[in-house]
Length: 263
Image (cartoon, rainbow, N blue to C red; front, side):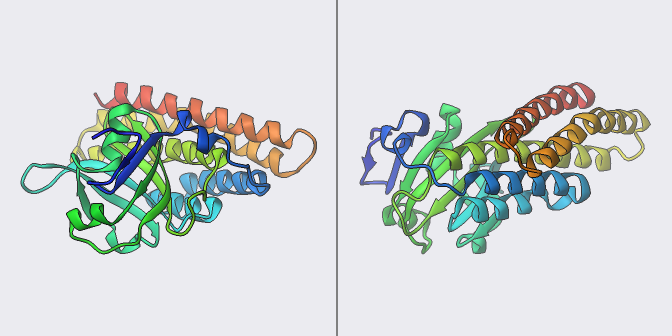
């Protein structure tokens, strides 16, 4: 089997998204600026005010902003038999009925995405579903964005069931930004689990509180930048670019500090 061409026997077709000439040539849609700005503001608010629901909010936003039929977050996990699987921990749209379901690690587009550590452009047809023993519509156009941090490995994905050219490079850029938020949200969930496990560990609690204070200033800066972008003006697009850069920096800082704090 050759990844990057149609896999008739498996029902999976995958291409390295950033090397896919057909995808790169797709016409960008005009809706992107306002849509991306709204998505960033909404996520920043939820991340601060309702962190427990940030993953579901994230996939809801992916569906709304990219015009996807479904979007979700898949995490590497192990089932009760110790087999490596991907678990769908948050889903919005047509695949919502499969939340908390699993797919085999060795037979999944997400596996290829993580193994290569590169975004994938993919399609799925009926032979794949027949192998899994489920009924679902073909994925006629789909994007997979990987992330790997010190605690969890997973993907953020968005799919269409009706168009072979539903997404473009602006959708990829937005999903890559949302994937940073997903990674941050999952790190925080891991942090909370550690704290519950060590409820009497005052030193760990102090480290967690210290990390929260370290995150507050750059998160506030991100929120301010999004506010300025919303006001409009000639520099609004630049402000949105700055906000995305600040998010990437914040995600890196969370990764570095959290791994040092709870090691």
